[in-house]
Length: 427
Image 1 (cartoon, one colour):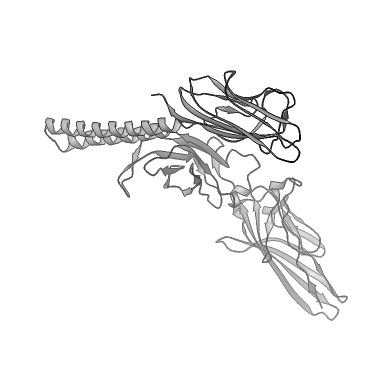
Image 2 (cartoon, rainbow, N blue to C red):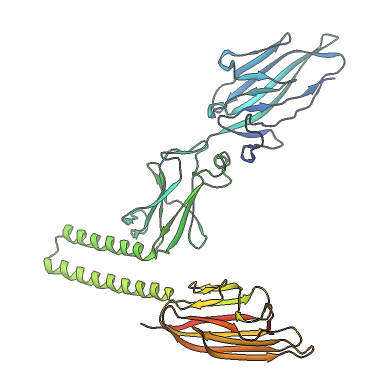
């Protein structure tokens, strides 16, 4: 009896060894291959002792079209149809390989084998595989460019509010199957595009606008994305949105809209001026509030660090492992805090020796002048700790650090830390 064993897989010719070129298959015979690569179907079979192959026929039914004859095998001769000549080759048993596949060649591929035994009895066997040819998207500049449009736009389809407007793409071909994009906000939220128009994906940012990095990217699980080479500029692009400038553009758009509406309604001049004054006052108030909040955010200065390795001897305690460094005013390499602006700061440090007959001789210094001092000595197994603290007024550029004065001192990395923060800055 004829036994038919189907072994089905895809191989991308010419790209062996490249991780991105590996394709996929499932147990139901559904496969995907990138456009321009080869479709390779290996159908292996065995015959009973009294059977031999009389003929074989390969066909394909493209999506939405009638079945087409690809090739036949008669009298031990493989004969491809003329339109596939030079592209279609016969592999062992029932296998075939079609080179340089196009999206028009997606479809249901099949092989039909006609066998005959010694008694002249013929039997037909058939196997199929669904193949999807995937094509990558294409843009005018061969990259996924994300942009912030200069002017805010009003969303007349929903909230009729003005929004900061981002675009992504310049697509002239969205690929096959057609791709969409994903947007990532500064807080990590994933959004879908507001709409697609004239080759671009558009995103209208929610109000109030959140400043930071916005990323436009092709979905990582999209078949078209998987066909892109590593490092392709079509995978993603990021733009930084300045919160203050973005909100100002919305305020400006609202003011221009109000002027236009007033002219359309033929309002008296004094009414128009009154409305403009009220709107201007509102905009100024909002701008001052926004500026205050942004200025306040820039005043945040704090740090916390721990000795990266135990320190012995004299000199400035270094290096530190920086755990917190808001405002980026502390250097773990030099162990020095540099005041970014005039103001009042608080500092505290603690240290332990964890070594018999060793000292902690720690000085908190402001530009080389002692402002606080701790001296301890460990006896036997009795652990000791010392600490320094101070509230200091610093002008921008003044520095604070920890200094050791005794050569026999020893600072354990686990128990030695340094912390400081800005209490309030000068106006």
